[in-house]
Length: 615
Image (cartoon, rainbow, N blue to C red; front, side, top):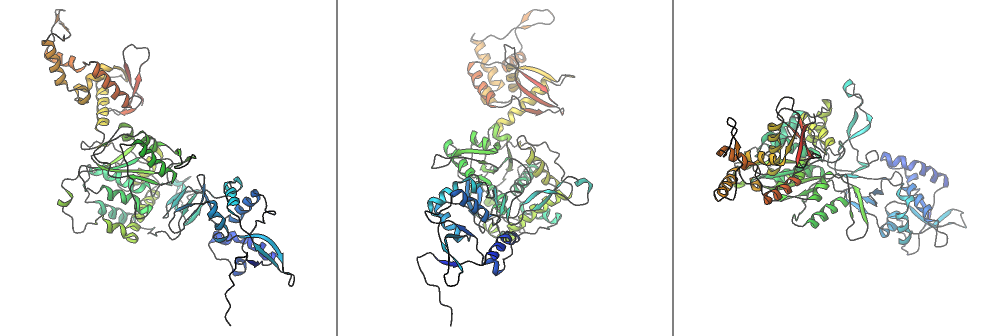
């Protein structure tokens, strides 16, 4: 006769409890089985953990319930702390789900498998122990979730990975190589929670070849991007490789990475597809770029706040076309290690770690000085419209079909990334010979070093394209180089005090900042016109032989015109100078010396600035 199904009832179930010794044994061994990922024997699996919650009159103190719950959840990798939130992680999708008091009341018995005991009893006939199940209730759950007793005992998760990523371990590299003495071991993270790195990697994520050889990895990536029309072939391609590696290597460097900007002169150059190639292998298919209303500062701040509160590993601003990007919030986003804001829809404050990698794509985009210093640019210079380009027969097309073929193409990208890391590791983790980026030194010593080891050099070189980028920043650099050449090239001259008139004169003579200072020709013509109208007087020159004053020659007039300013010019130029951030910055001269352009020198009536060698 088949077993009858258990009767349904709304009354609390009464369940038999195994022998006390078996329960004790199960409690001691349960964590070991969980950590090993091995199913417990049936006898032990029957011994479900119990939590005495009592009734209204017999309920233990909330602190006791919270402490006992934390002990029962220890080693189970079920409940985590992320920032100030308690929540769970969907093991299949990696999505974070914040725990609410309502969900917690049912989650504890149904998901965590903890039997909530209201009352212990014994069968009067057999003497066997029985329990009457209880419940937490929403009010009790709310207090438990807010209690320090639970929060300090839960594992902290800072990153949730969809694929296995490389990480440094505390243990040292054991390979027999004197050059590796003191090196921490690099390995791929395991699935599940890793306490050392506070990282959770979802189970059953995409698998990839962890033994792809060096040449195969290099050739495949080169073939994949060979037909893109790079504005400056070697530099832009190296910057792309650095962007390609950054999300994958985010556990191998401390701090932040620079922003990566993909810009082009024409639509259809492949900016968005290259950006997806940097994101989707690590983050999964369906990566959605963020909208950005650049004319609304509040909307920009709200967007950044939302990504910070979601602990997102990246943010991508797409189609920021034909504009100059100026944003103090974005500038702070790129350099801050933490982000503070108000939680949307409430009065609570959020303050959490910030390590998001920032991507920006657009046509003919320019940047202000502060953003340019914190950005690496991939310049795609298309020489014909997208529909007019000839596509090679063996080209790997970066299209939707490429990105949906997850198991082949995305897995191959991950295999290439891991191969590049292994190559760098095998060759002794050589440090790049390029100058590290300010504010991103740790990233500069890691990711560009990996790319350089694998044949992609010049990824940290300055971006000098005339078609897009920050032309104003380029002009400031050219002006400082001209001042260095004029005032600091004499032997034993490592410092000079330069007046603002000398700065203006140098700018005009080199054809810089014509929109603010006018061209030398136009200023000379206007001053000559005013002189003819008796509204301007040229400064008289002294004849060297006779010692008499004389009218200036046309060449001498042009030199006077070069340094001439009026109130309107002084005002606009002073504003541009203050915004330029030239003061205090370092500049590498053509003589190989490092110069610093200082602020105004003290004790001077006229505005003079110190230009001096610092190394």
